[in-house]
Length: 150
Image (cartoon, rainbow, N blue to C red; front, side, top):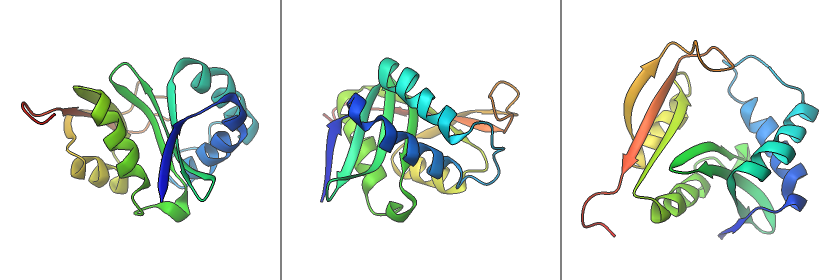
């Protein structure tokens, strides 16, 4: 069973570890930060500035999502939990609280792109990656609540 809750400062190390290991699964991205830099980023930026929801299974954090005013800034799932419903539960939670959502996904993240499209997101802009830190082509996705659907 997957449970959701808002993250606390006590979750910083677990979220940072999940962030670091999950991001490194995207082998097309350069390694830009150390694990320690990821920890500092999660502790001092993500947990401070975003609404962070963690997904837990059997008491362990298996995914997290960071949101800011209609944007999903981060969504990372433990590799062992991919395709187990964790991401769907997190996205559905965000969709239940928003009329529309946007997010960026790297163009080479084919699994992520397919997932977002299954969740009702549509690609609205393609870039060459010149403005993101990884300099990797990315896609802006947008989801809007359908009229009369809650």
